[in-house]
Length: 109
Image 1 (cartoon, rainbow, N blue to C red):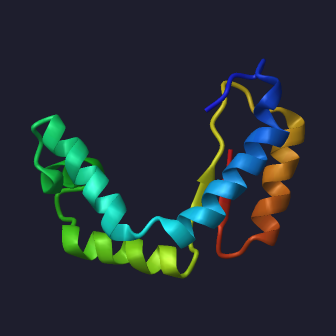
Image 2: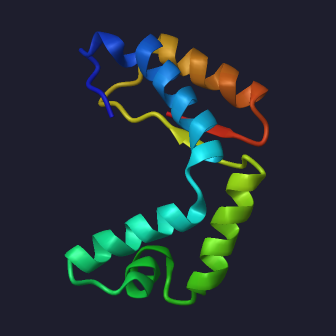
Image 3: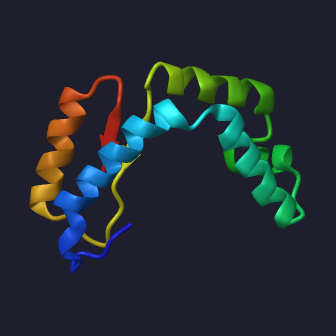
């Protein structure tokens, strides 16, 4: 997340996002993501399954959810989301270009 006045909003942030995307698939196994999520829940004294259900719906099967996360990462089916107070025209063009070129990756701003 960056403010519009942050001059790094376009080039540096786009490069950073692509770096995260390329390396997350290679170096961030789902077991690690899940463990971090569960650790965060434990620190807040929250049940991880209930936290997922609160966010994604009470009918969600948490084991199926984590299996889907694993499947999506292995297939490199990910969503890249740029968040800023204002999305400059130049960044919007980059996002639109990446979204057209990077199937199955979804790029949004």
